[in-house]
Image 1: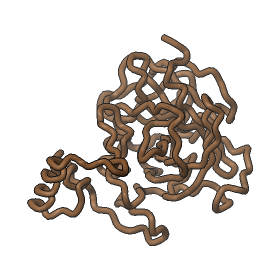
Image 2: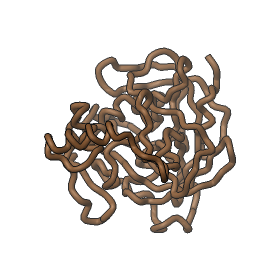
Image 3: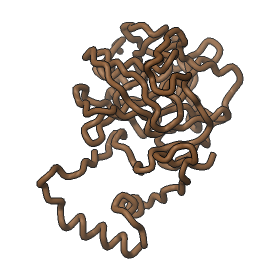
Image 4: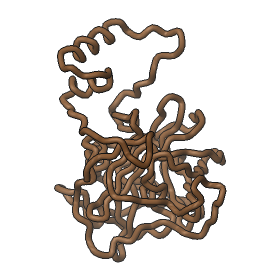
Amino acid sequence: MTATGPSTKVICRILNQNSCGSGSVVGLRNGKSLILTNAHVAGSRVGRVVKVEIESTGDKIDAKVIMAAYSDRTWTDWAVLETLEDYDRVTPVKLSKNRPTGSHYTKGFPRCQPFPGSDIRTVDLSTTDARWLWQPNAIGGQSGSGVWSDVDDLQFGLITWSIGRDGAGQMTSEIYRQAKNCTVAGEARVPDMIELVEHDYDLPEIRGNDDPIVEPGFFAQRDITTLPIWAGEDDIEPPADGDEPDPNVIKALAIAALRQNIESSEEAILKIQGITAPVGKPDPGNDDAFTYGL
């Protein structure tokens, strides 16, 4: 095993008003980087802007929440951010849809400070639910850190809590299930789950000038149905100016849309794959967001 592997190059520090946490670059969409972290680090409100510092490059960029899921009843606490400007200086490390096996490593910002990273030793890994506990225990500032496999260097976990003397987090396979179904349903929380955010900073320039607001529910920017953050899925980018889309693809999607009375090619793709997208409703407090039932 190695204390740090190549995937640690995607780690970033996230500063949000007076809180500090961690995150990792997990995808690209339309030239902009996508970053996974905890909802309690970035907030759950779509459009919230935070400061992101990429450790491997030293770059400091702004990013906004485009999807978030949080529950005070289940193991659900994650958010996806998108950079405000084009940014592709870091090669993303995608999220696995599979349950973790074998050995893993992690890196983040304990007490909001850089550290070399470490191996983790699994002490409790359920085969039926989302429970994953390990040593060493995690501390404040490590919320949102990635947990990567020593075998393929894909991300399999998201550090989120400390439970007793153990670190605890969410499996990316569980995040995939929740994202696909727009739900916060999952494993029930246990006593003494401590969120690992650090509160030693004051950034008045961040929009809203308030602490991260975390509300229970599933929230997504209204133009999102899927995100290119999952290992084994092709990144779907729109054709560049002047490029002609494949007419056979357009024809197949048009036929599917007509037969199933659906309105967009993205919905057609979901139907063809046998996935029924949950029905959201406009967020009365945010014209750019949809909310979904708990």
